[in-house]
Image (cartoon, rainbow, N blue to C red; front, side, top):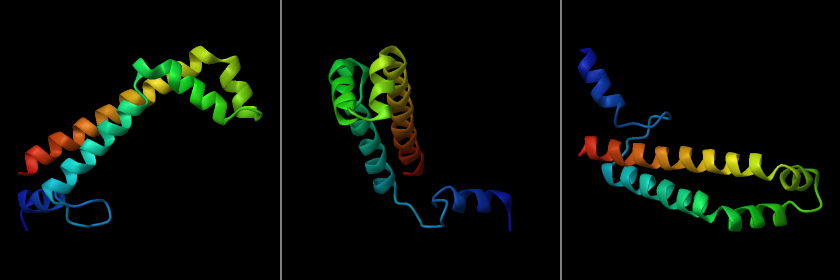
Length: 97
């Protein structure tokens, strides 16, 4: 079997071996981008309020409230990673079709 055949068949499969459709990959990318929009740094005051409210009264809440800048940086990094992942899926869907 040629290497190009192996690469072309594995590029349309998930890690568990399930075949992916370009529409499914595009939908997954859109879901990642929409989810990243929820934790966007422009919503950081609201996000910080929600996160600290959810974890209030716990050790995690005390950690978050006492380290707001680190919490904001962490939320921003998670947003960046989720946005990049979403765009990666969208690019993969375009390559597949």
